[in-house]
Image (cartoon, rainbow, N blue to C red; front, top):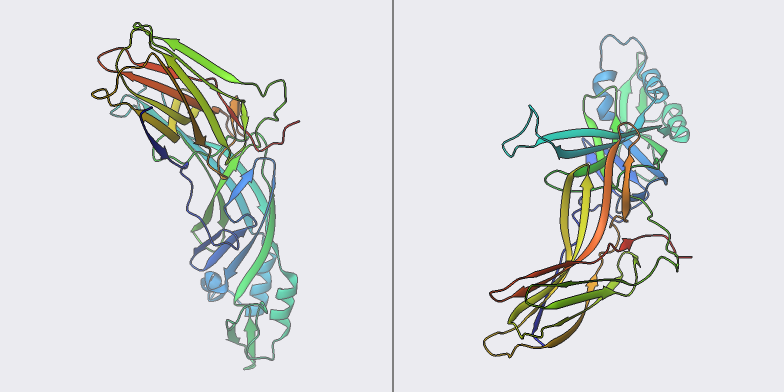
Length: 369
């Protein structure tokens, strides 16, 4: 039957965060979301929280032009809008033009999404920190043990200021966005949550993974997929899968066989699960899983008939659902498609290799009818 080898690769994704929710810390600023792996569906409601240490406003509080007491300045800071923004950017290569690189392609970067929401600051914590002006230490949040910042007023009273400004936010992710694609070369689509502070020139951000939920399967469309090919030496290769729709983490059973009436020498047969991602005419291909049969042509007699079956593993979440070809984006639109295919390759010794591609399978998070 031959020797069998396998290979498995998960799609690239941003680095993972602690189990309590993803977390970005830059100059002690924290942005957290409710999903630990940062994976969201388009059209879904995202909730999160921010923690901004007072040190990020220190230069504002120490500004000599301010004539107001520190507690009044803090109250002004808390009354200002703090904005969280979902930003999506796509990068792809296109036809040759004046900006072409050494490979004869021009690289384009397109913003596909800018969705904003306001951070709701904790009023309870604000009142606690500002009302206890006669205490040397007042905790802004009872769950923390850090010491608050203190300022001395003109009448030599110690005023307690909050160590951290906290708030929560809710952001509606738009429908009609292209799925994420993390790649070290075009094409790619990346999404980040960004926090901008008027008191700082820095942008604080964390990455997200977006996907559609995928199509809904129906008995009439969830049918067997098959294909076949014949080379010039009459080697006839056939392959099939039992159904069209699959869920993340599911195994795909691939059946294949060949007839070899002329008993040609066959070296190997490989079966590969591929993810295709396309932005306009720029396409990326990633191998997700694969199996290989190798035949020792020096010791084995050529077979007239051969049957084989293998299981290919779909990665678990966060894998993107299939995405049909369409123009998407809320700020600028791009043509985008995400597809899953199974490729079978038969390698003939000193002969004509066969490359057989099955019709697309559909990966979905939706439950079937």
